[in-house]
Image (tube, rainbow, N blue to C red; front, side):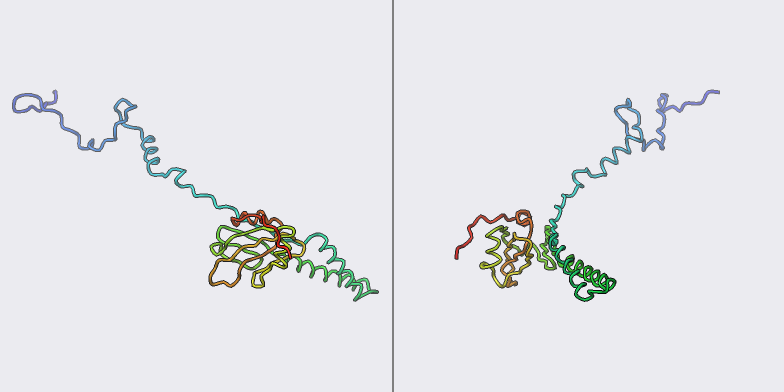
Length: 215
C-alpha cells in the first residue's frame, strides 16, 4: 500500500515538514557548489582569526652590552713570575724542594691578584659599570674619549680630585663621563680603556677634538 500524502484543506499536497535536526547545518562553501565547507578549511579559518600575526608578536631586539676586560699585559706577568722565583731563592737558596714550594705558592698568589684586580667595563642600555662601581645611565652626561696628550692631561693637570678614577698604568687612553645627578658630588667618571672610541660611542659620545691646554 502506498503511503498517504497529507493534503491541505483545498486538496493540494502540503509541503514536507523541515527536519528540526537540520536547523544548525554547516555554512555553505562557494567552492563546493553550495555544499558544506570541509572541516579542515573551517579549522584553518578559525586558527587564522584567533592567532596573532608574526609581526605583531615580535619584540624589538635588545642591543648587546659592551664588555671590556682590562687584563694585565704579558710583560707584567713575566716580571711578576720572575719576582716569585727571586723570592724563592731569597728564602731558600740551598733547599731545592722548599724553593719550589715557595715559588709555586708565590706564583699562585700573584696570578690570583692579577686576575682579580683587572677591572671590567660593562655598558648596558640601563647602567654603566667600571670595576665594582655602577651607575644608572639616566644620571650620565656627555662622554668623551681621550688618547695621547689629551689622556695624559686628564689624568694629570686637568684631573679633578672629586672625580671617580679607575686607571691602569698599562692602558693609556681614557674616557671621561660627566655626572648629572644633583645628589652626587662626583663631577665625572674618568677610567682607562683600550677602546675609547667604542666606549664613548656606546655612551652616546665621541672622541675629543680639542687641543691640550698649555702650561
